[in-house]
Length: 312
Image 1 (cartoon, rainbow, N blue to C red):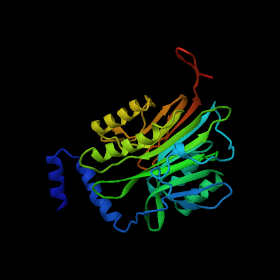
Image 2: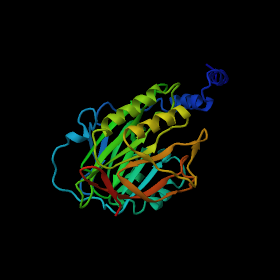
Image 3: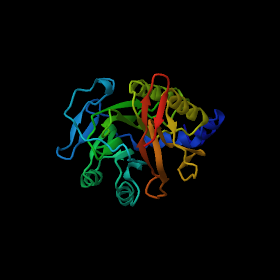
Image 4: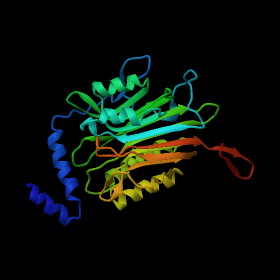
């Protein structure tokens, strides 16, 4: 089908033509992409080299983790987050912006992260622990969602869901961390939402799979990433997920986030935490502006009748 006919067909069913054309371009661009069946989780620590494992949440749920030696925790008074769709590091100065804007952050969420030598070197120089859930390999390099942190995770697993039209997966990465001087554990999830689809069925399935994992966790949660909620129906699905999990959606009242079809798609959802400060960073080194936020833990004291929230 010619591109002109694709545009007319997309218009006739009220489907964004630019999304459909993106699908055609993706099919062409990723014709030589390789989707790993196993060993989708790529990990490294400060003291160990890169390793690979299955890492699927469908094999082992986060609440079924094996006991591990005690590990340092995040500060309950300050948990700083940096979130960015890094556009496969295709634009100039991405490294400068990444190194500068992620400086001092406790947890870094990246979508469309391509695990090239430059990114690996930066993560090592920052002395971070990190995991990447690989969606596919292109030119031999794993690409997917990545979470890096200043303290080692207790557990990490990943989910993958295929794009209906281009068949390449979108990935989610879920990790748990200790919080210092607290019995709570922080669960974080990094999502790259299904993008190119004619309806919302695949998008719904992806968020349902995420809900099934997160609903097993009773403590604080940070869910961040590129939700690709560029339509009213997609945003409704995201908001229903937030309601089901008692998550709040961080409000960037001052604007500045990148818009797709008029809607911001980079989101941070949270529970059991209080936002202290947040910012949007204007860049030209990706098609998304990165966002950052600093949280503090909300301490909940349970009484016989009510829950009293005490903010340190």
